Image (cartoon, rainbow, N blue to C red):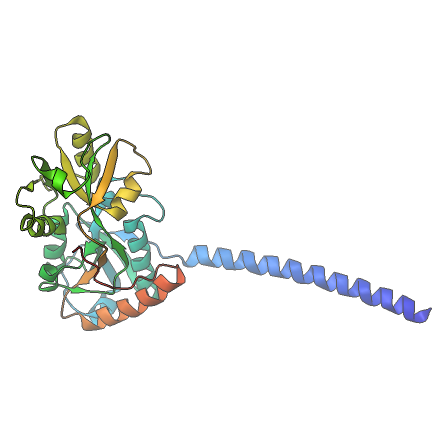
Length: 288
């Protein structure tokens, strides 16, 4: 009988300890959540007063206490959405800055073609703007490991009969200046000489170009599949019927002589891309 009472007491005591453990665990989770919110890096934007030129490597950046991230304002025209290409790249860059004890600062340029000149001049330290690795760009800048892969796509208004390269005959393609789309079209012209394209004003956003396609002012354009996936979340009046490249790598760009920064960025990206389940393998899968 005494053993039975002792067993009940033991059982009740264990139940109390169990509930106490659950309570403490819940509080610890809440504490972690609050800590994450507090320590999440605050991303600033450069102003005329805070802008400066700097071309130094990682030690110079640490001396100034900033990582300046060159990018396009509002993702080239579309509404920023959680998980989109530029949003992801900005978050990754901000995370890197935090690890290095730096303040992440966004430096916006008006057009894609302005990104590399701004980097080389020293207006920013790294380009995080879905930039494709190309041979021509590698002569000017150094690239990190790929952050993701994309395909360059022909984009048309909904209902357009364009279905492949042969159906581009007699059609006009309008593309953004400074992008790899121009190099791709020039390469395709060797096999498909009837391909016709022109360069758009640099200030036009992707959405503005798509609006002109829908109204018939423009016929076709080129965009990468990352952008198109985002665009098709909020508009159904355009289509991307086929690609004009295979999977191509997108990466961050920095000045070629910033070797310490490149090594640190690569280490950070490799770990972070695995952590978030986006660990691309560079296969250079180009179209035949």
